Amino acid sequence: MARGPDGKGGGAGFSLADQLFNAETAGDLAAGFAMLPGFDAGRFLETVLPRFPGLGVHARLDVLADGLEAQLPRDFNALAEALEAAMPPPLSPDLRDDDFGRFVHAVPGVLAARHGLEAPERALDLLHAATQRFSMEFAIRPFLNRWPDLVLDRMSVWARDPHYHVRRLVSEGTRPRLPWGMGIAVDPLRPLELLDLLHADPARFVTRSVANHLNDLSKIHPEAVLGRLRGWRERGAQDPAELDWMTRHALRTAVKRGEPEALALLGYRADLPVRAALELPAEVRIGEMLAFAVTLEGEEAGPVLVDYRLRFARPSGDAEKVFKLKPGRLTPGRPLRLEKRHRMKGDATTFRLHPGRHAVIVQVNGRDVAEGAFELLAV
Image (cartoon, rainbow, N blue to C red; front, side):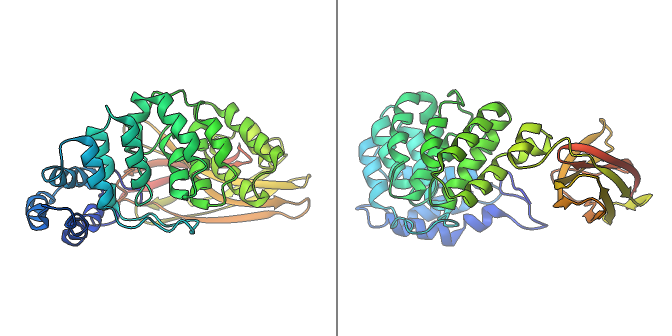
C-alpha cells in the first residue's frame, strides 16, 4: 500500500514513522554524533524522543534535526564538517539495487536545506557525502530552485561519480513530479542531458530512477520522452534487455492512456483488429472478489497488452482507474482467454468504495474493446 509523508497506512496499528524513528534508531544516530567533542547523546535523546508520538516521517526528521542543531555549531561550514564527521561508512558502491540505507541518515539533508542555501558550494559537498548514506532527493530541490545553473553543473559531474547513490541523486533529485518532494522551477527538459549520461548506468537503482523520471515527464512532454527513448535505442550504449525494461517502465502511464506512439515503441499495434467477449457477474459485494474473464479473437497475429479500467460510482461523479491484466499474443483461430480476480476493498485508505452501478472496461493495445456493468452492493 502506498503511504503518504505522514508514514501511515499498511493496516490497523501500523506506523511507518514508528518503524523508522524510534528509541533504537535515534540511539544509533546519537551514537554517531557522540564522537564529537561536547555532544551529549543522552540529552539529545531526552529532547527528541518525547516529541515523536503522533508525528509522521518528515516531522520526525525535523525533530531529529532540531535536536542535533541545538548541540552543533551555528556557522554553516563548521556545521557541515560536524555532520560529515559523524556520518557512518558509505553504503557499498559495489551493489546495484535495493540498498536504501537508513532514514535517520536523511537528517544532514534537512540541516543543509535549513542553513546552507547561502553557501551552496559547501552545501552541495555535504549533500554529495550524505547521499552516500541515504538519498538526498528531497534536500537537493531547494538548492535546485535557488541555484539552478550551479546545481545542474555539479550534477553533470555527479552523473559520472563512482558511487551509484550519487549518480541516482542526479535523476531522482530532478524528477518533475517527485512524490512528496518540493516542486522545482527548472525547465523539465533541461535535465534530459543528464539522463543521457545516466541511461546506460549498470545499476538498476539508477536506471529505475531514470525510467521514473521519464514517466513523470511523459505526463507533460510525451514527445520528448519518446524521442529520448528512440535515441537511446539507436545509440546502443545500454544493454538491450535493460533498455527494454526501462522503456516499459518509463511509458507505463502513456500506455494506460492508450497513446499509439508509446504502444508502437513497445511493439504493440493500436489498430490490431480484436473481437472481445467479457464475462462479468451481475453483482458483487464490497470486500468480495470481482471475478471476470475476457476472451479475445482476431484474424491477424500480434502481441496484445491487455489492461482493464474500473469505473467507480461515487457521490461526486464517476471515476475510473486503470489496472494491468496481462500481455499475450493473438493468434488467428486460437481464442485468448484471460481471467482476473479483483478484490473490491472497502477499507482502502486512498480510494473509498460506494455501492452503486460500476463497470469494467477492457483495453487492448490502448483501445477499448469491451465493457460490462455490475452492481456493487454494501457490506
